[in-house]
Image (cartoon, rainbow, N blue to C red; front, side, top):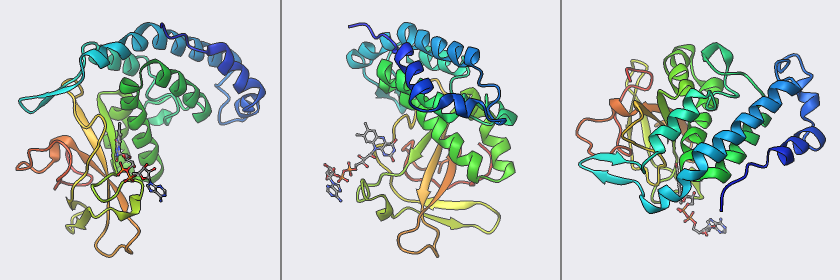
Amino acid sequence: MPYRAPVADIRFLLDHVAGFPELAATARFAEATPDLTAAILDGAGRLCEEVMAPLQRVGDLHPARLENGIVRTPPGFAEGWRAIAQGGWIGLAAPTRHGGMGLPQTLAMAVTEMMSGACLALQIAPLLTQGQIEALSHHASDALKALYLPKLISGEWSGTMNLTEPQAGSDVEAVRTVAVPKGDGTYAITGQKIFISWADSEFIGNVVHLVLARLPDAPPRHPRHQPVPRAAQHPRCKRRSGCAQQPAGGQP
Ligand SMILES: Cc1cc2nc3c(=O)[nH]c(=O)nc-3n(C[C@H](O)[C@H](O)[C@H](O)COP(=O)(O)OP(=O)(O)OC[C@H]3O[C@@H](n4cnc5c(N)ncnc54)[C@H](O)[C@@H]3O)c2cc1C
């Protein structure tokens, strides 16, 4: 059954239930005019119907596979990612000074909802990247922001969330991965992560893993997040996610 983006329903919910007009009336979101909001929802609807939805079945028929150490994604997923990235959809709510559009997260969530309905398997790549953009925007140093945010927002790189471990699923605080400061602003990270979505692909330039880890002096249930570029992972580690020993804010 073809996917039809519920643009009119979402518009109704934003305008009459979620209070979007009040949000758009604030100085911070002055650019979220009714015209721009309508154009964004219409554009997202077209992307979902024409580009993403057809990939849903392709993903079922030709799932991702590991070939000689390289993750091969389903046919068309690379083009789908590029359409999402080049359309600026990853950075809809991201800071403008790093290349984002600075629009309300509420609007970005509406777009996410449509993209999830169209092709969840592909959509989770920009979703996780957006999560990482959000985390870095709030908590990273200016140097880390300058290094990571423009590339994550443009889709040149993608981001993951490395939380789950064999003994830590729902109980995230049970993580055992540790981040040991090396005294030069970088950390040595050791541990095992599992179930990491979009941890690798054959077409994204670099994958930045945001790894949940404990500092040596952390209280038993108090982990910390650390960005880890794929290219800086421990050279002896064959896994694309998991063991990592690299600079926290170092070279990608
Ligand atoms: C498709 C997919 C993609 C994923 N992508 C990522 C990713 O990108 N990054 C990442 O870090 N992780 C990822 N995960 C892992 C995901 O976050 C975990 O699977 C999830 O947190 C559940 O953990 P678990 O599988 O260990 O199950 P468990 O936590 O062991 O749960 C097993 C069962 O016990 C139930 N249960 C657990 N705790 C309680 C409780 N206190 N009370 C009652 N019932 C309970 C659960 O509801 C479940 O039915 C992914 C998983 C999947 C399936």
